[in-house]
Image (cartoon, rainbow, N blue to C red; front, top):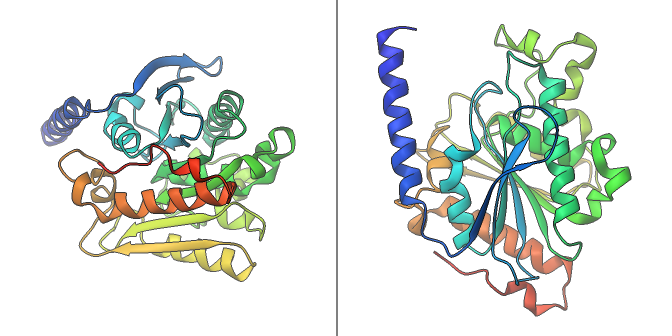
Length: 289
């Protein structure tokens, strides 16, 4: 590894450590390293407040080009969501090149299964992800063959929130993606746009206008195809915001004035109420931070 890369990694790690050191303001309980499968990275962290049956849960998948990331790096996301009135599940998953995408998706399925089994049926449930995590979350939301039949997930899932996600990126433009998403007969399974349906849970797709890593055309393509099919999908594009900027909106320094955090909170509050229109208690605990 080059000296420049080492220095860059050091500052990135130091920045995450600082961000997460500040992310300890909520009254929630953090249950760490809960196993959800048998693989070496099949562990999750669960942030929750007990005794609040109306409190929705968010299953959050982080990004990292399917090759990097750790659940402990994203405490700041869970902290902000918890302070906004949501319980949060953050799983790890196996990474490339140790495994290929079918195994990564399998880990995401197992984390979703654990969440479905451990969140009460009457609690609103959302999937949310950033970058590669948004791609994983979109597939769990749209591809009915993954979990829907066994766990009735369409009825359980109140919506999907995707931040800067790649949903329509075949043919691949990065050389190692041909290997990552192999075997070739499974390439199509990596593209959320291949699973469009009118009866999917609502999608809320967010992108930075200045994102050059995953361009905003991905979210536009997915939204337009879902709407054309008769489904529900909305999209936000934020000025002067890049690929990493959109997730940094969840840091304690940004969140109080963040339109990203406010928009996501509003979407999930609205969808939580729509699960049981006559149950006013679903707004309980959905406070601002």
